[in-house]
Length: 569
Image (cartoon, rainbow, N blue to C red):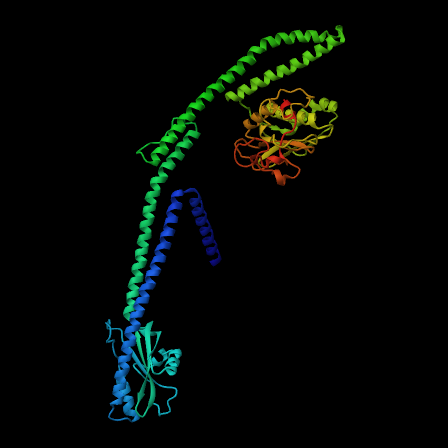
């Protein structure tokens, strides 16, 4: 039972600490108030401690001076009584001592009525006369006399000795001034006379001072906290407004602006922010207009080229079919013409597809499909190409990898990756791996050829980009393959990642969620030979660029090499 309660308390403490830490990280207002309260408390505590010590030192010095003077007066009074005693027998002398030690109140300083001094008369160590016994105001008062004070009186009997000790008053032990001096009793020898003066008034005054300091420090701290809260709110509120407006601008509400009031620094901040928002709005609208113009131009050109291209295609097909009737150079030209027309048609198709992506008109029909079936179709279609390049395709797919997908688009992505790998495998095998886990399915295409160079990672998916323009192309492409593949992956909320090292080959990995709208936690297929450097998991966010930290690894380990990544389709 106790253990369960303790665990509950621990969990509650952890939750509270986590909430405070989160508030500390996220709230400037909270941090300023806490820091102000902390510094205010520290200053109040330091100042209060210093003042309290000074007051306590003054009161102690005053009590010590008064106690010493009172002790000397009492000693002189006692010495005069003993000297003028009519009888000097033991009983008479003891009676005089008891009269001297009777309860007294301080006469040299004001008393609260409850403060009373105590007198103790004790036989000196070197006294050889018959003892009178210990004489004290109350029984047991001799225990209040420190041994060090008795030793001091014994060592220097000609002067009064003083020490701060404690004495009981109303059941409580409080500081007291204890003064010792030597007296000489006729026919009794040397005795030590002690006066114990409790510092009751001083203790009460210090208590009042301490309470006043605590309450004053608390009030000062709360006042500082309130001032810090109000002042910080005056500063933080415009900052929060700016953050809110920024979020609205990020969401697309370009007409949002900050409210400007006054002419101070915060007003200038709001004015500058609004001017920046106006400038951004104008530039964004200009870019939107340019983007629409570009999309319109691309779409119009692509459509307008369709008609003449169809005519050229018909003529080319007729020439290509009759190439055997031509001389060798003309026949070769007919073959080149037919091949380049094929590439031109592919380029037009890709441009139309890119224009649809740019216009936001591209959609995907998500139907359950198995990546193994898609890989099988792609491999069957690329067998002749692989054989011509001397490359062996090796498929590793043990379990079903079913996920909602647009089979046409996913097949296009896989075909791009496989043809890229074949072209740059340098007659080495290409491994195609398919796997699945509870949140994702993935296919990775790994070759062992030229690999990817450092520094090209952030550009690999750019349109018409080439890492090495001097490299000869063995398989025709448009330079838009990976750009289209990236957009296809985004339509599926998937990841498209790559890794490579010069001379060690490259690996492209496509990861798709097993259910629409469900985030991918980890990819079931490794990306790099040592995934500790690149990582299986993708960070949060819709980052599909290859080779950046958002793709799970350092840029230096995932860089595209050669023209392979721009010539794929």
